[in-house]
Length: 294
Length: 258
Ligand code: HEM
Image (cartoon, rainbow over all chains, first blue to last red; front, side):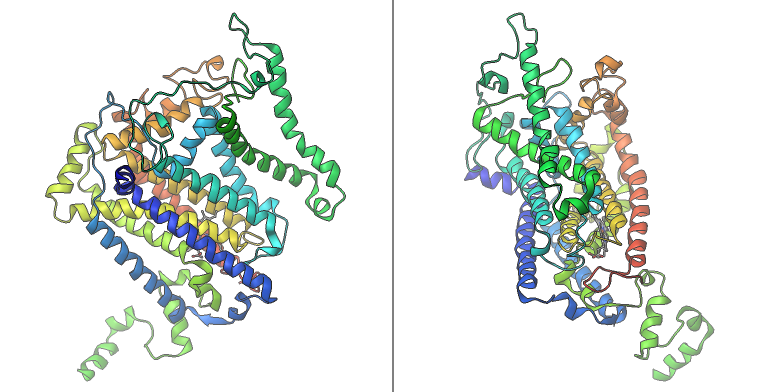
């Protein structure tokens, strides 16, 4: 318990606690609104669509919100000091070294993927994928009001990405990761000398194909196996297309947008898949090449 | 008293500042918005649900408020801070121990920065859940994503400035990924093959050295205090302008033109 308190009361971790409460609260709140709209057959927002004057109606809300936020901020700043630790010392590495909390999801991905994927490729896809959303979501319903029924896939995908892959990983990185980036329960004391024997194997080895020969050179069979698996994974894109291409949604979406949606979706799902492989089966790599590993 | 006020209101000076009287008429309410450079960011009339906290969560507005707080407290901090490795930490100590209201200003800057990261994520979540990125607001969502990235970068560059253990190691962890950039990083796929070394790759450019050191501090300082805030302000101006041009806050009926 002592350790949990240690983590929670770190000044820089207070925002995470705040984030957690706000995210859960907002999710429940908006789903309540969405389900209400879906069930009652009319939109609550439509009842409020008459025009009113900005002065005083909006300016009043803005003023009150400003007061509210400033009061909280000033109290927070009076009560809790921003951290200032020992002076910077490049020769003394703290263990664990953690990135700022909003990047802990990315740091957690480093456990499952090499840095070039976790630190560069996936973040780039996150940004590009987010920017692409308005152009690949062709469902014109659900514009300007809360709803779930009319856009289930969109809402579920976003919630999965934001709530699980972003927020939950931040929480995991803050509370469950200790020295050596090992897994500790939040209430467990951190054992700085813990060493866990590395027993990770490559996926091909589960099937009896060794990644490397005795002289440490790559086994071509293992490379072919890995390439086949990854191509097979993304081959789901054309396969699903073949199956569904005559449905109304697919016709409206068109081949180009479909491919982008499917690619981004599968890339996002690659993270939980690799997490499960690593945690359940100790899988290290799916594909090993001389230049990069996946 | 009343007479004095009336007299005052007749003077040329008064009239040159306040363009209309304050009788509660629709016309004056409109003028109040239009005649004020700060308020005229707003339209004169909007739909009722746009003022509804339950709809917008007020998160975009609060994000902007926090940005303003950060600008003001940040400028004050700049009076006490020198971005050189031998001074930075000492300046922070001095600020926290000997400057009147120094800790308050620093704390407000720190906590507002954390809060802004939270509110910008929640704002985005709200915009998604109300489908407000759908036509005609697609482009404003893209501008929003850029603002999100800029907010994270502002926060990250600021994290280094106290120049304590927390700062350099968090930034070391964060920037270590850059060495693995495909093609541009010396440990990334095809990086070494293309001549990337630790002293010429993308991470070297970001840090101004092979590790987080004094040149990094200066780079992050300039980015944090000048470059990023200016870029972010420009995108915010575009963001707000677009909200109006796209017909105000989205709603079941207000997706047409202004
Ligand atoms: C520095 C960051 C940002 C600031 C200061 C900001 C500010 C605002 C404000 C004040 C509004 C008015 C409505 C409201 O308060 O909800 C708004 C609306 C909007 N924002 Fe942002 N925003 C930021 C970041 C973002 C991000 C990250 C996104 C999404 C990726 C985004 C997308 C939008 C869209 C699409 C609207 C229109 C919403 C509607 O019509 O309902 N903004 N923004």
